[in-house]
Length: 148
Image 1 (cartoon, one colour):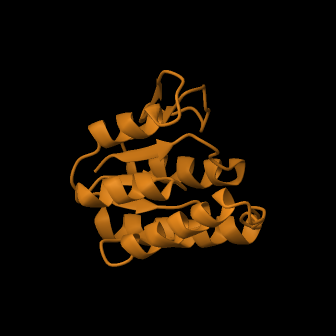
Image 2: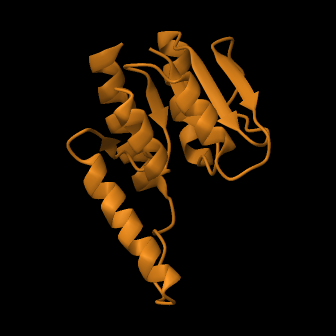
């Protein structure tokens, strides 16, 4: 299994959590973004910088991801693409996307986008904090314990 990290807006609070697991499990990891993102120093991490563009990092992740790989991303359409390749995806708040729930998340995301585009003001997600990092750590570590 390879771990992929969608570097777009990757929360700083998660970096030490993820780095500890990468080191503990010698987990091959690719951090992909259109700018330099530093998770930490590890011989198990490869940093890949892609061209500027809205979905360049997403396209590269999908191209490289294989069955049973894990992607950390808050991008629901990317998670959907990963699930369709029989990969796994988890968001920054610890939500593990699956074949059973990804279409529901995608539909909700598309609905909210449509509402925003119509001019309706909607609040964004709440600020990321320690409780979110804790929820992520629990789900991430449970996934790794089961799959590594």
